[in-house]
Image (tube, rainbow, N blue to C red; front, side):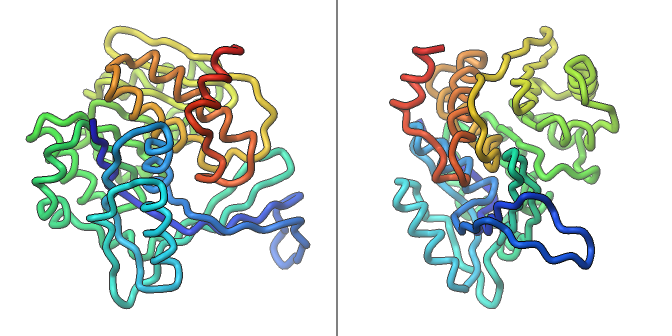
Length: 305
């Protein structure tokens, strides 16, 4: 079983802070770390760490970050045939600020990610058509996302779209051919224009997307858990209780793990539970990809729950 991730990579520049500075104010931050990230790359690494065979399609710059990103994919056993350099362009970077409660605020500079085009999907058609699931996010051009969804439909390949970072420019009608639509609550609010501060509000907003034609909407809610809404009803999965250190990349951890489990079992609920445990363990450590647990850790954790 093979998973294709068509999407972004970033270099994470993470500052651990007590609080965000005010305009014109300079504060000292306790610590800083640099690592490989980006929603697409994180999801690919999460799936690979769970045991999936992963093909990554992305673009890097021709700067000092590019080779490190490629080597990181290869170290994780990810197929880098379609990880390509773009001359004269920077790699994508993501300055991340993590407060003392583990909450994060993130900026992204897309850089080379903006150069991943529909033609790249067509050029990889033979290898992509052999995949069992395609994962997408919105840190690349929307035209590329739409083209990948069409490719999945034409080749009868399930598509999982993580609509992040959310944009009102996303054409819901064009993404209705996705098998899974996975926003978090803030992304759901942006996409629907509905409040999502309570579970009932999240359910109502997700049902609005089902009415528009989406099939399965799974909303990740951080410490509140995750909600699965479809035409058959809704089901809430409570979060596992852990000591939170850093929530960066937790949503990507959920998606990558879910994808791996789903292609092997086709059991949505069991895949959500596995993904929830994987994501919960990821927030107990600093960083994004390096915080992702090994399968044995997840199994041991679930046996205790």
